[in-house]
Length: 404
Image 1 (cartoon, rainbow, N blue to C red):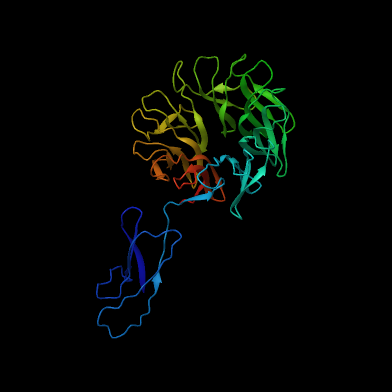
Image 2: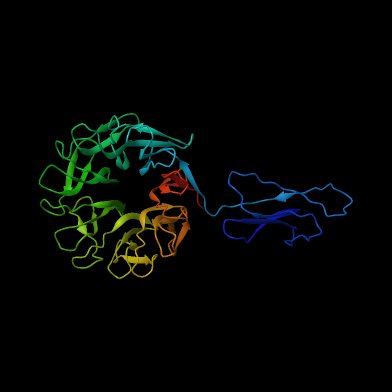
């Protein structure tokens, strides 16, 4: 029995050769198959048998066992705005077995609500929140009580407010900032059977923590008392509490906070002491810990940190050594690892990275001449979907990563 073995080869090339069942390479006088080059994903694979000069028979029986494994696989899932123009798919969320997001197609409808069907592998506009050529700009998509919630402007005179979509039609929730003013709800997250978000009401408070039960909306806490903005951001549930970044009147800057659902929100830590901001961002739960990007003013820049729920948060890695910012963003758990976009000092630009609990490494250089800038990562159909620019003359479109 003969088998095909993959040997070491230069980057972007695949070298294969026939070997005997005992693992020894066939000698040059034996029938051989040799391949050393690039195999296009859409190309054909051919196997040729060449008889040694002087052979008395030209008939061969060849049994080939070929096993391949892709260590990384990027694929553009859809070109929503055909050609070089970008559709800029953003705020990806799974709803009703499909992938929803904001995008701009070539249908002159502006930035609206789109969806991607995994069966047909095609995108289509799901709703035109702002009819006509204007943009409803749906953002911060989240599923709650069987409906898709988001922030949008419906051009109904209410400004940018909280909306929801039942799978057929979009509708606006109660006007948080009454009249034409914008409440700009953001970072929608389900906690304790309520949908929490940051917003600016029509009262004397600034941008604070709000929630809805699907019927009414209410202010949860005025963290920065008065008309100032505490700006609760990156809301994430961890250890039965709602965590987020915010600023208060305590002079500690933008730091990590939590809300237990009953008592007033409290600050968890002060990574950048005194008046500095550590700016915790892109919070995500991985391996029973809360991970986020932050700058502790320790000379390491914006790097990846974690909080175990008890002890002081710790920096887990320095992706961009010394004072450089790795700026990890859009943290998402996939295939037992934490995936995110980041930049190192390797000249690869902003690309897809992963952290396995011990080490961080570059997953792949999707855009070899610049930044692919993977954004809005979400797991859908056992694949990692995101917005990116693959330098394939298609602009910024919807991409996916298969693993491993």
